[in-house]
Image (cartoon, rainbow, N blue to C red; front, side, top):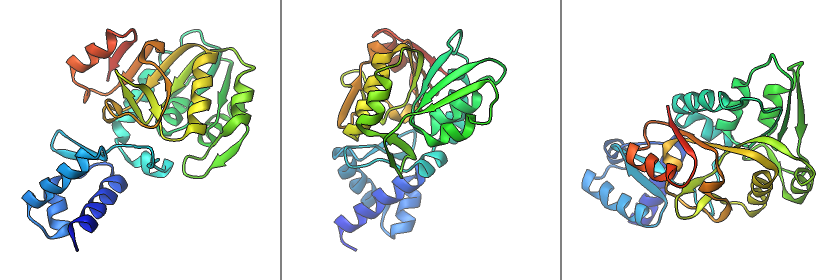
Length: 253
């Protein structure tokens, strides 16, 4: 196996597992740890992986959108804590946009069932989580269903959202950056998210610490658009403070 094939294999391994360490990669590809580190340096220079806290993590880019099933396996305990904390920010909201993605799905599952709510979402998983709740009305946005994400998109969804005024939007992103804001790889998905930002009176971003820093292809919102950011303690306190200076309250759980 030449270096290019090995690096491609390492990238596929990191993306499929969500996190892996140097020792395991060295064993799997039968090379030295020094070789693994050199390969990872190349991948990191190309913005494809990030090394943090002793592990190697994938970075979503313009050509990489992880499947919902894969995202469900990555950082699951952290996402569960984040979702519970985000759901507590519901307050008096009656109409709520819930984005596509596994963390938004967990937020949907954490919402109270004992009060009337109207949920607007492109996510089939969110519909499945809430459709049987007697006091919750669920509006599924129309459009093409993307099988990787199990969510609708395109101009049909944007057109539906343009007719709504929403109390609170729970937003997901492939990357959040103090420079580039909230980003996602797919332009059609970005349009839906951008319309949700415009339609909502309040906006909350919920995401794991690894989403902070990377910038993907399509920008759909600014950090200053957000009322709050909910993330894990893996985001350093100093970095959380830098985001908070841009406007939103940053909650680390």
